[in-house]
Image (cartoon, rainbow, N blue to C red; front, side, top):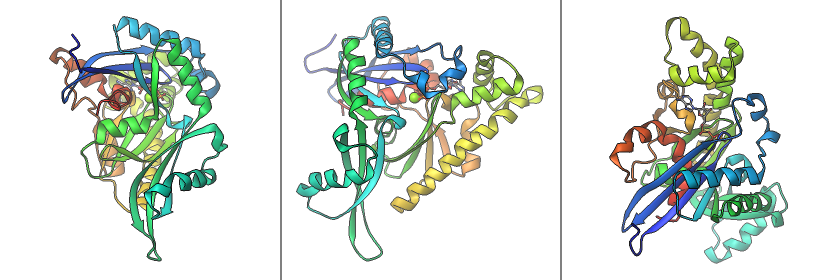
Length: 353
Ligand SMILES: Nc1ncnc2c1ncn2[C@@H]1O[C@H](COP(=O)(O)OP(=O)(O)OP(=O)(O)O)[C@@H](O)[C@H]1O
Ligand SMILES: [Mg+2]
């Protein structure tokens, strides 16, 4: 029952292989999980090779609206107000350094600066920015560091259409890294790297106390691991996916071929993480001391230890539901699938904190 003053809210992630919705309710200071839903899309594994190509990812808006409607109905979700998170590759983010000008002058300075950094005409994007730090350069000049996010209007229109098509009000759009930062790093004062291992892409977000500071991305991801197994063992993508999920990196004996085939791909992802870490540390002059794995790929058995060893940075699997109240009987689901819902959860919380 919704009491007076209770607020419900939806967060959504439209991933390459899945659509996820999380419905939260806030009463007083408590945030509870009201409902969640996940739907696998596009017959991903059947069209495995196609699914890795960008063009086929452009599923029709009407198709995605229909999927959203199905989740709303099946999960009995009532809220109609939603925030959606966009993958890093559909937006543009960068760190800008400006002299320490008065706050009131920031909007016009940013409008001017953004032209130099954003690869699209400024009129065709929506800009959002936040001051994330300060530093003094070699000449003693004080600089403020601004994190700039620009989302093409074309993307905004597309998502508006998709959500309206499912009778939802799309109240906000943000990049996935912002949602992840909010849900995984609030209250943590040291810089943390969040690695989101999806199906089609892996993103590297550096965040501090709930805010995104830096973002990078690679196309090597969960799908690449499955593909390496399928072609290396000459088995179907579906079988490869099963083996990957059941055994992960822990298979021994005759099955150690699984690790032999997957580790080179993981090494590529880890090298990208190292590069992102070094880039962040150079720009911000501060170190990253911990790493959190999220997205479906975070469930790969043995992955935390492998990351910790290769990167020499303590790596853990994300627990995005740590500050959310949920019924005890779904604990096993939260344990198993929690990381896959991190983005949608972070988006849902946007309007509740
Ligand atoms: N138990 C598991 N072990 C290993 N990998 C897993 C496991 N469960 C799911 N995955 C992988 O997680 C990936 C899907 O993750 P997720 O749901 O985060 O992706 P997505 O959001 O749809 O994709 P993207 O973010 O790339 O658009 C798939 O590659 C899948 O194989
Ligand atoms: Mg994803």
